[in-house]
Image (tube, rainbow, N blue to C red):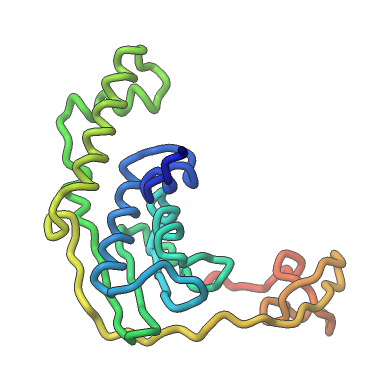
Length: 203
């Protein structure tokens, strides 16, 4: 009889590999669901705002059901390991800030090993040592007390509106269709953003 995959195994399968970044997002999602007393969002019951585009976002999407396609995943390009989750069911919101100092703390030898692996100069033995080091980090992230892993606090939150479906208009220049709110007007005709040749003075 086939054993049902764990959530962590499904996250690895979805992402493509196991890594500390994926473990970080996995743990964030677990904590958010627990503290908001929520389950995976089938529609837009949950909203997630992610402030990075790193590996962990894949785990957040898988566990919480917040995705770009449904419109309940909002990406802000701030480069921070910070995540905000809002529940439409309870009208509560949670902000999670990961303890990145803990995540990035490593010895000079580990830093040198990482440079070798990603620079393509590591020996097979060094690659194996790095893989073991990464697995230890993953295990630590997945099992450490939540209060050591992150700061999680309930916050006031204005829930964004639900995703809308808009009409599309045909770009006068390239002929491709574009969502009406993203269209621009050029010489009195609708055009898409790439065809708009938008004017700017660099302010």
